[in-house]
Length: 451
Image 1 (spheres, rainbow, N blue to C red):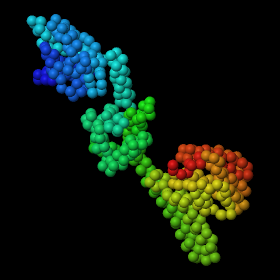
Image 2 (image 1 turned 45 degrees about the horizontal axis):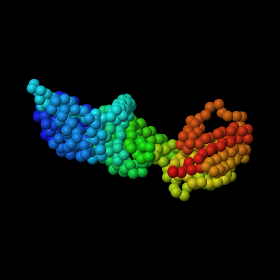
Image 3 (image 1 turned 45 degrees about the vertical axis):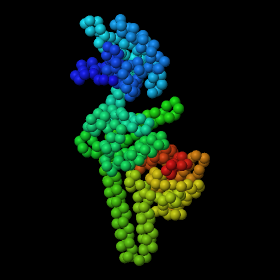
Image 4 (image 1 turned 90 degrees about the vertical axis):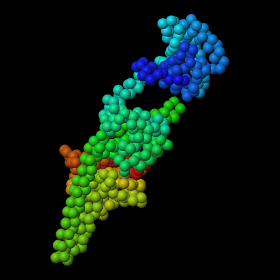
């Protein structure tokens, strides 16, 4: 196929974008040029001197004769024909119109292949859907992207290009990985390949290069889109800028660790004062040693129970159990005043902090107002596993008479409730009985360990 001469008029660009296959031939029908749709769908890389060379072999002679008959009269030609494409026979209606000279001779032929109505309607629907998708995603505050089933990135919304400052299309394919902080690239690639291999949802935090040149933390998520046969046909993902929240959390973590450090220093100072006083009064040394031990245990319980981030979360060990954690929390108090019974279950760092926070709060309040505030008081802690549920019961007896629920709840009490409800997905119920507070906590049997 020869090409149209340089300096082709603007119609060349217009025809190139048409949703139908179109071509131009000389007066004898020899191919001069075909648009993108012709090259991709009909010719498919095949070089043909005449458009009829691409027909099914058994139709070539008949179609050529019919067209030449029209050419003699200078009339348009239209007929359904079958093209022999690499994907098999392609049945379409062909229309050819002559461009006549002043003498009435056909100097050029313009051919168009009209898709059938159903296909045109489907393409129109696809175009409308794409337009709706563009409008929707461009209105979102998040960066939105999409990939083929193999992970090849082929779509980004306007927010992506605004954030990164990159030219349109420059991050298609694997170009997106170069936008990550160098320290995050391998981790992001590993996680993405895992999702592509397994079909699991994709979620990761990484640093993405802003158009200012600064790397900002974003939360990347993606879900697979599955077809009728459950095969993945697309991946749709988002990037959410979490840099401000990330830095605020880091600042809060620094403040929390500093506060915890100072509290532990106070425990250490009190312990030091006790031991100094005991040296001046040897008879009080046994009592001082017991009290110092309880203060040290209180410090350990505080460190276990305070709110933690992923970085500061304590490691409780593979052999840790619920009863072991509860015993550590109650160690600062007289051992004759508390007992732990029932079913013991494993616990790790996921469950240790919320459980410690709740029972540290209960023990502290019991020491100030409840059963642990007087010698005859007692606390029973029971754990019962019932199928998929774990029930924890805190029961105070022998303390001051309870007049009913308090008018207000302290911050620690509210924080403890949130730990059970949000972190462990359970419930906590308090019953202010006259003989003492009773608390029931119900959580999933496997909520205390990572899945």
